[in-house]
Amino acid sequence: MEKLVVFNDYANTNAAFRNQGTVPDYHDLLNYLSEGRFLVEAHAFVPIDPRNPHARDQSIESLWEQSYLVHSKVGAIAGDSYKCDFDVEITLALMRTAEIVKPEIIVLISGDKDFVPVILELRERGIRVEVAAFPGINAANEIRLKASGFIDLAVYLQERADQAVAFEEMAAEADDDRL
Image (cartoon, rainbow, N blue to C red; front, side, top):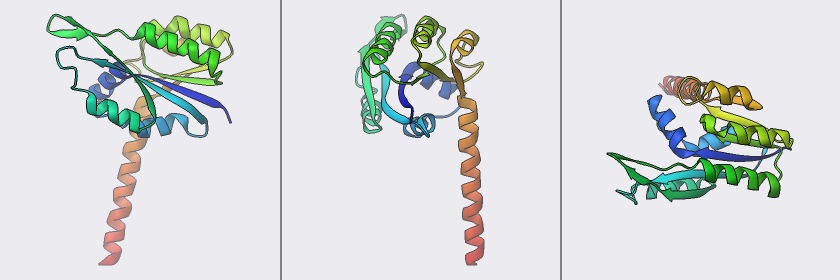
């Protein structure tokens, strides 16, 4: 069974799911991405708003409970918002994982094209790098082309919606049978 490590660029992923009008279920997403493979570990990189540093405490605890290794960093105030760039930390963690864990597959949940150079480096080292993102929402075309594979999160959401409808139909049929 292939060894898999997952990296979640939390801010990028959350924004993309919100754009789709939904809240991500990170446990379910992790199960979806690792299905049929041996999940060694999963990392989540969570930015912290310096104006409200405890706002994500519950989300971070939930990620820990869902088997993610959580890396957090306090951002810097930028006008009315804040900026917390995790690209360097994620890149270092990707390279460290390649050297120490030696997975066959890495899944990067992010569509940020800034990761293209590290994706290419990992591929040159023989590691399959799959990108999981929403095309046209948070997935730059360049990252889709340079990754070993692309996991369309819109397909993931549609599959989950179809499963929910099928479950509701089965429940309705069961209720009808009881009458």
